[in-house]
Amino acid sequence: MQLQAWYHSCSAGFTLRGEHSLPSGKPVLHFVHGNGYCGRTYEPMLARLTPHFDLFLSDIQGHGDSDHGGRFHGWNRTAALCLEAWHARGSIFGDVPVFAVGHSFGGVITSLMLAKAPDQFSRAVLLDPVLFPPAMIGLMALSDVVGLYSRNTLARRTRQRRHHWPDRQSAFTSLHERGMFKGWKEEALWSYVNHALRNTPEGGVELKCRPAREAEIFSSYPRRLWSSLARITTPTHVLRGDKTYPFAAKGITRWRDSNPVVSEQVMPGGHCFMQEDPARSAEAICAFLSKDAQRQPGG
Image (cartoon, rainbow, N blue to C red; front, side, top):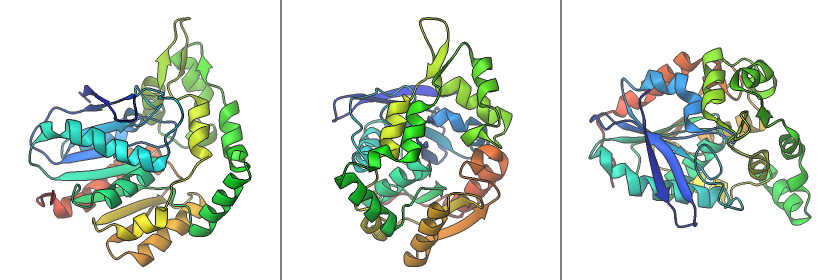
């Protein structure tokens, strides 16, 4: 894909960065990645979407080439900052339909954007968003009060994960078919290795997203999530893996049943099904968004 870099000095005091395609008059996809990734990690899927859409990839605080920015500002502020960056940079595309797409953490961020700016996007596709059920959020909040949630198993493991390698081939070999990368197409893993890692002065490579930042996100949760989900009026299609986290599947179904603008489709694969089968995922995204390709955003 041929993309151009963009940057935005945001109101939180750090610089957000990402990439966008050259404006061509096609509808635009605003894309937000999952925790620990960056926009171009999904290049095999996104490349299959470029014949139909222009792209605006937004890398959140501490991910991709965006600044680490000190403490993590939280899920809700992250959504507001993504909107801020889009409002600052998105005008280059002109008056075309704008669609929102996000994966996992980025799917929740996108849902918070839809709630905050209901007229900004014509349609949305959320890829396995981690929608914590209300009872789970209550437990998180209680654990947070007593200082336990920051020490949850996922966050603890993330802090301990390997974060540097001698070279990219070593990184690919180390990660191939392991942990969260199990089942990924090789082209998808290479996109992660090529874009979510940076060169170090010593000659090796390291994760752009520090494990501590990834753990901060795993140790936090969105505020007022279900009241925000209830306010969404943008037609939204949720794609989820048939082997995803049980809590996410439960949350997605709950939202679908409670909000008439939300539809659900089960895809073969796990939480990162779009990295396991980029072509099938791109086809499903196109199928939903093409229903509304000529609709203009209301604002």
